[in-house]
Amino acid sequence: MMELEKELKQKMEEITPIDRQVMEAAWKNWDGLCKPLRGLGWLEEALVQIAGIMRDDRPHPDKRAVVIMGADNGVVKEGVTQTDQSVTMQVLENMGNDLSTACVMSHQAGCDMIPVNIGGLTDGVHPKIRNRVVRYGTGNIAKEPAMTREECVKAILTGIEIVKELKEEGYQLIVTGEMGIGNTTTSAACAAVLFGKDPADVTGRGAGLSSEGLNRKINAIRSAIAVNKPDPKDAIDVIAKVGGLDIAGMVGCYLGAAICQMPILIDGFISAVSAYLACMLNQTAKEYMIPTHCSAEPAAKMIMEKLGMEAPLHAGMHLGEGTGAIMGLSLIDQALNVYYHVATFEGGHVEAYTHQV
Image 1 (cartoon, helix red, strand yellow):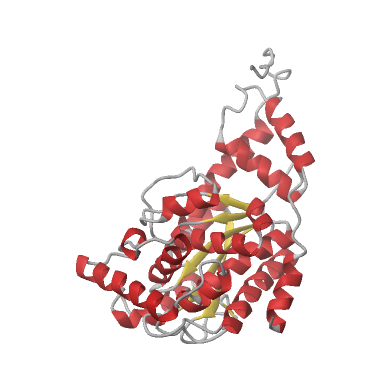
Image 2 (cartoon, rainbow, N blue to C red):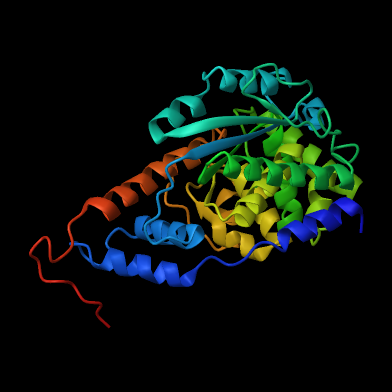
């Protein structure tokens, strides 16, 4: 085992289960509120999970960060996208300048945007961009591996370090997001390998491909799997051979959130693939992940099922950038709103509901 993998293994040994006793206390608080028991469904469940993660039955995840892992993907050379690779870094710059869709949505959700350049073709210019480039873009997976195994592990460790830094800066909740032209191709390639599916069953149009473009995308994924022969039981091998640096970075974010005992919200298809890969590396990390929305990409529902999760939002979204998870955070904010401001049964002069069998 290489030194970096030993380091990753050591870091993951810090992950412990969330606090069930605190969760029971949070359920008791919910059940004392003047409303039908468990009447808010997923909203109550998410808040109880956050309580267990934060080890506090009165959680206040007030300082939030949307962490965008930005990277370029060499598979773009196969004509699998509508735009060229220059868009990746341009959107990261736009995030620095507060211009992207996710930035606008983040204001309403009380989040700070944290763009991370983990594998763009160039360094980011805007001072808000955290330049942590592992390598400048990946190989074309249709013809070669995306990266070396060592580079993959380094990118995962980079994601962990980013979350640790944010924890030290006072952040309490992480929203996952990504920016990388071509990354629905790499994510679909990972999904096809992990779940033993034909690429046509897990591949969508991404950011608006034509039917001809979709066929190119499917064929590129078939070539990538044939050329690289990734091992579906080895998460690092899958990412290194047919994935991307943004995916590896997000895997690190999930592991980092579990290490730092912070709630982390799963966004859409790419984020969910990364969540699944993180769980392959450490199953306990899943306890820190909160699903938010089910992307319109074909394999999105499949991945949620494989994770044993159900996302509350089905809005046909497939924009990326963490936008679905930011929307999901608005549901969590309503849960917090009710949890702290609705009267108790005693305060509301209503006879308490009891659990019925």
